[in-house]
Length: 183
Image (cartoon, rainbow, N blue to C red; front, side, top):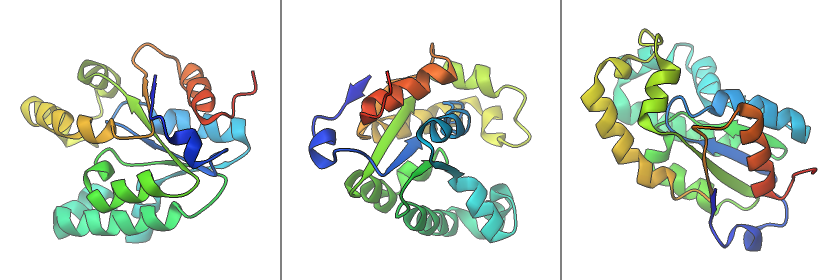
């Protein structure tokens, strides 16, 4: 686990924890468990986006394009990132928007946690979901996307390699990084 040196200088106790990482990193699995341990709420930004847009992200993307999607995604995340007592899971590409990344890195009380997963683990964990994740069927594009996002993910306050960890071990690692572990 890598932790940026200024995390605990910026905050004594995070008021919200934001999970980022590539698909298959466990954000939607770990997030609810982490929130339960902390007594906080869990929200998946993609679920909020879809509810507000009235359509699946894939349909919004096809209808309006990526720039419109990223702009609206940023608005959703910016609104949610003001809430306290929240574990927020981001969509895998949210980190590519500089305004979103900067908001989360500089937000007072926000701890941005990267759940780092190797591409091979993504393929193993996400196999069979190509109908909802069409990018999985295009291995070359998937690899380029992973390589493009990895340095951005690694800008997070905390980076946790999750390939060999169970969801509960990831929860404990996040809690330790946040200074909230009860052990």
